[in-house]
Image (tube, rainbow, N blue to C red):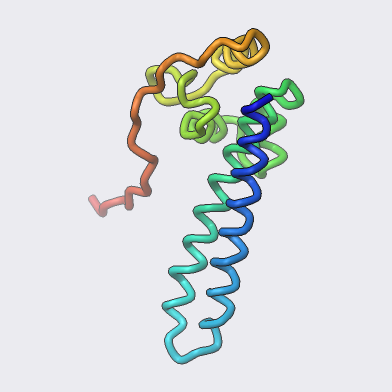
Length: 136
């Protein structure tokens, strides 16, 4: 259960980081330059998104949730869950060639965890980025 202890420790530090960023944003929101608050709010949102993704990964690996139910609990569509899980530490090694974690990848992760087998080496993928639409 070393993995579970690491997840709990990481979760606590991520939550502390979210709180720190929100506190910093609160300090500058009422000041003349509110743009500084945006930096802290964005950092808090990014940390919270990572925490949601890691928690969804743990929920599906533990067998307590399906892709659909984990996504619904996080306010996401089922199609949005696979790519987000592919960015997590726990499930990145089980992502397919298109950068998604599927039910078969989750079954393999569950099996590896139960047997104590190490996960396969993860491919390095670039994080998803917003690409604005360009007028035609």
